[in-house]
Length: 265
Image 1: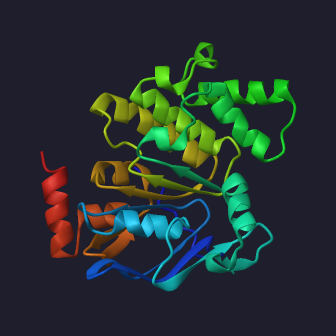
Image 2: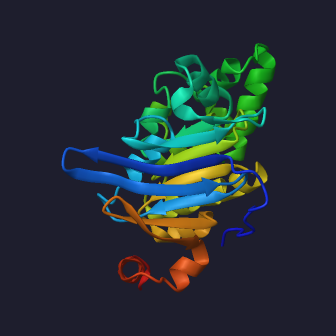
C-alpha cells in the first residue's frame, strides 16, 4: 500500500491546467487539470484508448497540447510554463530533473553498449568525469536494482526483459531526478518478474522521495505504487482521489466496472 500523506501545503512541482488534445475528430485528452506535489506518486489509469498515454506525452513535453499548459517548478523555485522553454532548457531538464521509463526498455537504453555505460552516461551528462567514480556508482546502482554486478560489462541485449527494465530504472534514477514519468513499466512482463520489479520500484521511489507520474492499465500496480489516481475515459478524467479510496469505494460507474473487471478474483 502506498504512502498517502499528500503534501497539500507544499508548492506543487507540476501543474496541468486545462489540457486538451485532439487528433482530427478523436478527442485524446479534454480539460485535464491537476497538481503534483514533491514526493507524490500519481497513477493515470483507464482502458486502452482512454487517453492516458497521450496525457503522459503532453506532461513530459513529447507532444504539445492543443489547449492548456503544463508548468513545472524549477530548482530555483520559479514555476515555468514548459511551452516557453527553449530546446537547451528542455534537454537540461531531462538530464538533471526528469526521468522517463518506457514500457519497452529498448526505447530507454542503448542496447549495444554495456550496462555500466548505460548508467554511467547519465552521470557524465550532469558533469561527472572521473572514470573510477562513475564505474563505482554504476556498480552500486546495478546492485540497487538487483542486477549482479558481474554483468556490468554485458550489453542489455544479453539481459532478460525484467533485467532490462530494472537497468532502465537505474539509468533514469542514478542522477536522482525530482520527477519521473513511467509508461506501463510492468507491461509485457510475467507475474513473478513484475513482482520483483515493483518491489525495486516501490523501495526506490520512497527512498529518493521522487515525484512520479505513472501510466498503467493494471490497478494492482496502481494500488501498490501510487498515492493518488486519475481515472480516464474517452480523454476525460472521470474520477480522482486517494488510490485506496477510489479503488475500495469508486464513485463513478465506469470506475466500478474497471475495478470489478480487473481486481475481481
